[in-house]
Length: 237
Image 1 (tube, rainbow, N blue to C red):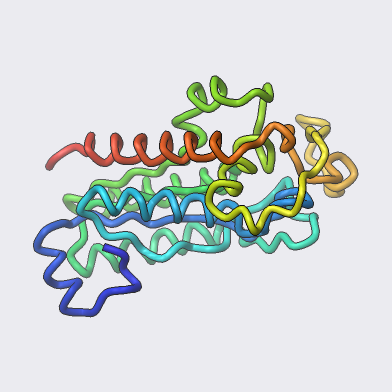
Image 2: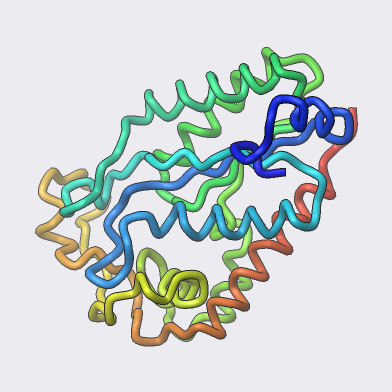
């Protein structure tokens, strides 16, 4: 049940069938010169719409902004602070709980470390506070790391590379503008630097040239199947 498309009576009727809601989280974030700024949101929301077609759950509208650190200086990226994301998670889950929902899946299409950490920190607060709640925080790219590594031809593929380009080629090929060059960030870890563009000019981590529509279809199915598997494994109170 896609939340923004239903009425108040629809919500009340569906609440008798399920107490589970999925919150998608994305970004407005550079993805090289060839992918749209909404790549993270597009991929995760399309995957979750397919999940909702197979399981009796609510799907909330996506949160379109996230924490972007490595790409924060790139043109087009518009991010929020970890504090703002923590607050958003707290407010959304608390109010959904107040409306009768009890199982919360916070699914992010953006794998940034501070972004995921902010979501998990709020989930830890909420699980102590909300009696009878079940909360999961997950990024498909993390839980499918082994499967995606086996599917990708590019070693260490990541941001705007082979996998993400393949997914957008499958989901919205009209949004793919050619291909960016193969690139990998050269950030001087463990140092934190301000001018990240100096070390990662093109904003690509991998080789988009290896992308393909059929590969994107396979990846999307992996994501959908894994999320369904996690929903089905939800502990019962």
